[in-house]
Length: 291
Image (cartoon, rainbow, N blue to C red; front, side, top):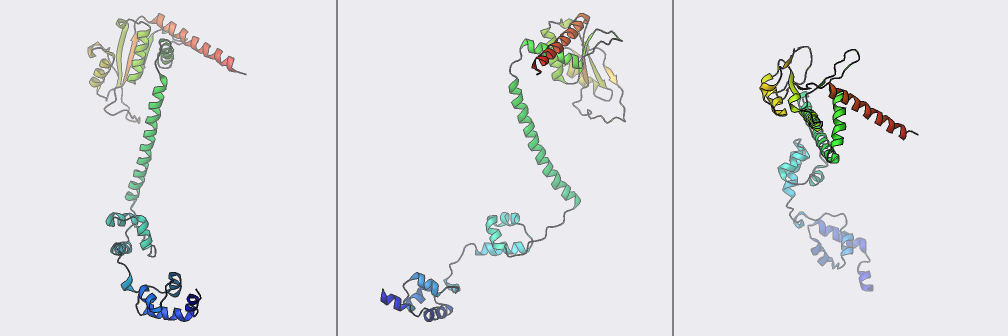
């Protein structure tokens, strides 16, 4: 142990000899054998700060890739483009080119900027649409089966919202319902069946703008309620006003269907009574809940 310590007593002198040998191009093994330094820690301290000669470096398979990455970066390429071109990771590219100046971002035209913004907005809209559909699907499962009583109440409320109503200044006690939504019409027809309204008492008429495909709309509505187009009453055509900004001008526009119940005065009176019965029941329940 004493001999080993005496061996490295002149550390600075030993370091000068080690550095000189290193600069002559000797490897670590050669220097170790020349100076008889068996301790790796001592050898590391002797050669600290002295780079190894080129011939001792192991070839690196990424050297060519790194040099190519630097060339491309100097040409103004982005990390994404370099990654696609060379097939290496962005983290490696970042290390290889971090000392190089960042390329200037090319100026975009107004059209290019608009296109980029539009793509971003379209992506957001797609996410929102998926959100909307998922919520609707979930809500649809929460309804469950519809009882006759529930259909009865829904139908009364639906008629009072969308159907014709008698006024004190104009007594017209008739059942007439009009809507453009086929699902609403289907629900109204189910309600009439629940009330045992005779199908022979029903009359149907289409209301539509004169610029639409009237024949196609008549065929659609007749098929929807299960009658022949010839069984429809005369279609009411609405004049087209070019100054109005109408949105329902596409091929799916079918106008509205009016459903009338002949000799329906008694039914109308009952509907009105049912409605005010619902209002009274809701008001009473509301009073009970007040503190």
